[in-house]
Image (cartoon, rainbow, N blue to C red; front, side):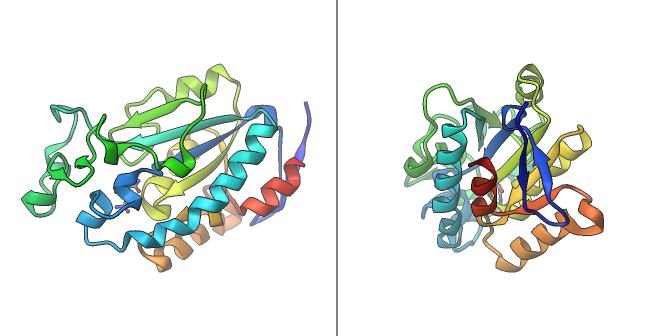
Length: 222
Ligand code: TIU
């Protein structure tokens, strides 16, 4: 076992890279590019670009170390039989989940918009988890994948900080995983929610986990 000490709030955390997974949450065209789900909700999607380069750098370091990297995509079956009505019925009918958009049907599996942005596309062997909810554990195979690899710590990146990243970190924390969130590898349509989301994780002695950044994690992995 090797140990890397990551500078973080509220305090440094030791991780064994062989038992740590990087989870990249929902870096999908539907959230980051014009015409997708994020924009359909009235958001300025360009705000999410800030996370792309830091995630790319972090993934480079994690791949060099041979760490497990898992990608997630929010989305639903083409027949939408797994999509809760309460989720689908939000928003104007022309821009709801399943409606046709410039990148295909919004947030539907198999459509171009639901896929991961080219800059962060998974490489061969990296699991991609399709999830119907905001959290990556709900109704997915993620827990089994982590257990089968003896993972004990997670580095959780992606978008948006206060929605799918937060939900996943809360789910993971309750399942016993130590979660590190690199703040520069996350982003939100609401900068103030991003800021508060990170503060919520590290507050109260790290009530949901640890907050760090890509540079500190890469330095620890070196
Ligand atoms: N709307 C919003 O901020 N987020 C989502 O709907 N999904 C994710 O965060 N991935």
